[in-house]
Image 1 (cartoon, protein in one colour):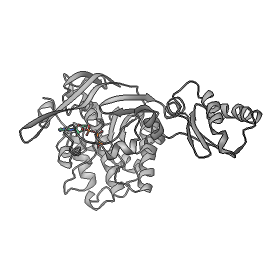
Image 2: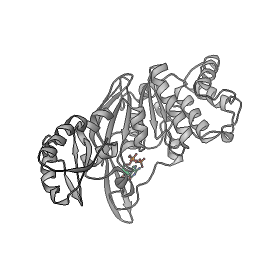
Image 3: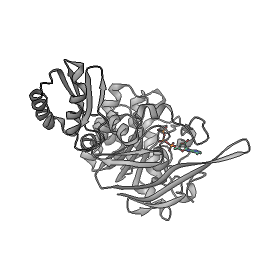
Image 4: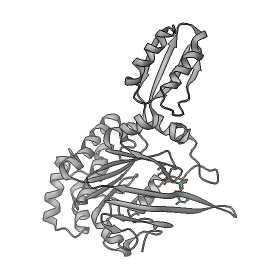
Length: 365
Ligand SMILES: Nc1ncnc2c1ncn2[C@@H]1O[C@H](COP(=O)(O)OP(=O)(O)OP(=O)(O)O)[C@@H](O)[C@H]1O
């Protein structure tokens, strides 16, 4: 459904007379199969939105190529646009119209008849738990309802592939959980392929069949959450010894079951900690070994890794730390895509493009 090779996007920024180049996306290869739900994860400024904008034809790649829903994003951008849905970070820019009218107008811009759009729209309202809100003004809806309306607009032309950029940012936990149900339902009920960006690791974990991690414009991992945790991070084994004199001997024995990985076994007071793949299987043998050697433990804890541990193992930085230090090449704070950016995209739920001529400034023409 998505096949990208060597995608690169560079931006030139100016500060006074100084020009500098930001390599926002730096050679991304990506393959997404039909029906997959893929979570695209990375810290602020990692290149998620820029990648998405290239895949949705809003931004011409500086180099590299991508086929999306069967078409080349540069030479067949209109064909790509007809087959995809895109819910941007900022959501749709709603007019003063009622929700149902917004949906009808949107669907008709894709060439659908009023009757078809109304039928589909009302059905989607039910599926997205928006029933009863067809004649409501979007500005009077809750954040969660507006986000679900964004998704209805993105789905009205029955795209085979849905791009969601930070779909639950700004929603309360209940509304997020609710939206997760709907996103899962897109694939389960409609067979839609879903590609979503998020920096909520729990969200990526819960929703995705596969997680693709991007850092500084490059893909650093791509696998199921379970495989990433088991193979990349490993379980954290925390051994607490009765006698601090035994920590070094214990650390050596823990090191021996780390399967040759750079386990970074650490010693802190009477604690010895290290990462072990499939600790549940390896630790019983370790305990027997320690017992035979007369190394007495006060406690043993095994912690399952998180996606943040995976990121830390891959990049040497915590995803959360990376978030707070995300900077542009010239040291200023990374600019976030603005509402105007989203509203003018031509692919947000607000205004679907009828032709390449509708493309926004900076997009493909
Ligand atoms: N129009 C632009 N001009 C200059 N630099 C840009 C532009 N758009 C993005 N960038 C830079 O490109 C890099 C990647 O930005 P991008 O928005 O793709 O990251 P992101 O992973 O989506 O971040 P976030 O999670 O904050 O949305 C950042 O360094 C950003 O500052």
